[in-house]
Image (cartoon, rainbow, N blue to C red; front, side, top):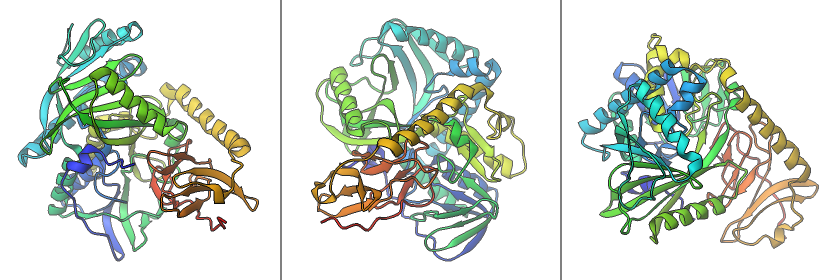
Length: 497
C-alpha cells in the first residue's frame, strides 16, 4: 500500500545531497523535520556553523505526515495543563505557541508559499460523555488570554454537535511539507549545510561525534531533533508512543469550508479541507493507537468507515500515518539533557507548533541565553506531575517483554510464507521476523529491537517492524525508519526451502 501523505505527494522536491567525507562543525543537528530545519535556519542567520543530517528527505517524517494545522491550544486540551501545572503555565503555553504560529506565518508569507491561511478551530462533542470537556477547555483558554467563544452550530456538512461548540479564533493551516522544503532552502542560503539520505548509524554523545555510512561529523554541540532522541535517554521511559492514521478523500457534497474541526465522541476525528493539484480534499485523522500493539490495517479501515459515516461516500486518494510521543506531564522536553546533547521531544500530536517553539528555545540556549519557558520544559525536570503515566509506560514495556519472549512465536515454515505475509518464526533454534515481498523475495531479521531488546511486531500498512516499547520502527531488511534505535535489526540468512 502506498502511504505517501497528501502533503508529501503535492509538495516540491527538496534535492539536497548526501554528505560525503568527514567534517567538523559548531552545531550538528540530527533530523530534518520542522524542529531541525527551523533551528538550522535560526542558527545560520546568527552566523553559526551548522550541519543538518536527515536520514531520508527533509520533512519526510512526522512533519510531512501531520495535519498541517497550527493552533494555540493542545490536542489533549489546555485545561489539562492548567490542572497538572497551573494557570500561569497554561498562559505561557498559549503565548509560546501563538508566537510560533506568528513566526511560521512570517516565513511563509515572505515567500508567498506554503498555502498559509488563518482560520478558526472548532471543538465540539457528539456524545454526552464528552460535553464537559468543551466547558473546561473554554474556561482554560479564556483565562490564558485566547480569543475564544462558544456557539451552538458548526458549518453545514459536519456532524451535528451536542451542546456548545468552542470556537478558537485566529488559528492557522498550511502545507507542512512545502514549508519544510522552503525553510531548508533558506537555511542553506544562510550558510547551513543541509544533507539528505545521511542516516546516523553511530552516535557518541560524550564525544560529540556522529557517523553515517559515508562519513563522520565532529561537533561542539549536538541537537537530536529526531522526534524522540536517538540512543538511551531517561525521557523515553516517560513517553507513551502512538500512531494515528490519516486520509485525504474526495470532498463530495460535504464541504465545511476553511477551518480546523475536532469532534469528540465515540469516534474522535480531526477534519480539515485542502485544495491541491486542482482537486479539493477532505483530510481526516482518526484516533491514536499504541505503536506495535494494534492492527494497522484495521485502524485505517476504521478511519475510512468513520469518514464515510460522517460525510458519505468519497474516493480515498491518499492514506498515511504518523507517530507521536507524549510526555508524562503534558509539556514537551526541550533543552540539554543528561547526555549533554540538546533534545526536543514529547510533542504529542501538536508537533508543528511545539517543534517551532523548541527550535526558538534551543537557538537561544546555544547562543548563551536563558529563555524563561526553557526552564519549564527542561528535560531533566523530575516528572512528579506525570508519575502515573511514567509508571504505566514502564509497565507497558515490562508486559511487552514478558508476553513476547514467552508467547510471540508462530508455528509456520518459511517455505509456506505467502507473498505479503509476515511471521515471527523459529528457524534452526533461533527466532526470526520474516516477511515475503510480492515478488517472492524473503526478508528475515532478528525480532529483537536494538534499542532495549523488546520484540518487534509487524505493521501491514507501513510494511514495517514496529517496537511496542519505545516506538522504534524498521524496514523489512532491518534498516531503522524512526525511533530511538540507532542500529538496524540484524539480517538473518535462512534457507526458505
